[in-house]
Image 1 (spheres, rainbow, N blue to C red):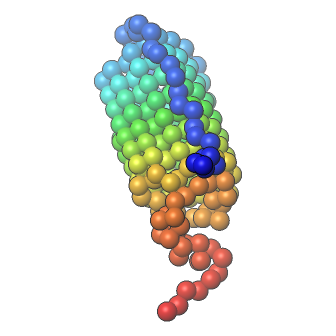
Image 2 (image 1 turned 45 degrees about the vertical axis):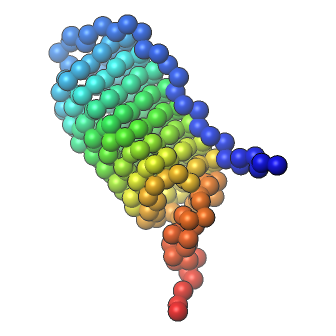
Image 3 (image 1 turned 180 degrees about the horizontal axis):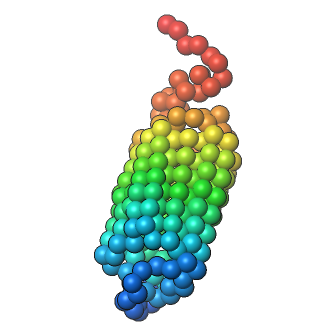
Length: 221
């Protein structure tokens, strides 16, 4: 008999964008309400729009360098080819969101809530997810350099064909986290917090020195 899977997979976002209107405003505003819009090739760098709400939007090839979007809400929205350094989305809420082929660095998502989110392709350096809550999140084909999950809660999170470099899992709480298909898995801190995660036998061998160091075991020939 085939063994039943012991790790519950993530639910992916399901939404269909309606007919969209072009975004014609000069920029983003605090507590702005953006519904059913397409934003293409815009530079939102340095703009201050905390509390902004994006629903049924397509954001394509836009720049968000140093944009301040704390407490923003993104619902049923696709972001494709976005880029930016130092984008602040602290305490934001993302539900049914696709982030595709992003090129970003130092993105602040600390304290954020991510539910049914797919992050596919691209590269994100120094992603800050400290104390965030991730449920039904899939990282697929992305390169994550020194992501910080410190104190976060991860439930039904999958890493598929990803490069996870120098990840910090300090204080993380995990349930049904699937790391087996992570192409490159490198854990800098918090290897002792992998309870609730599933790894492959090959990954276990690769992580053996890290596990040994975490519990104070010397391995000598």
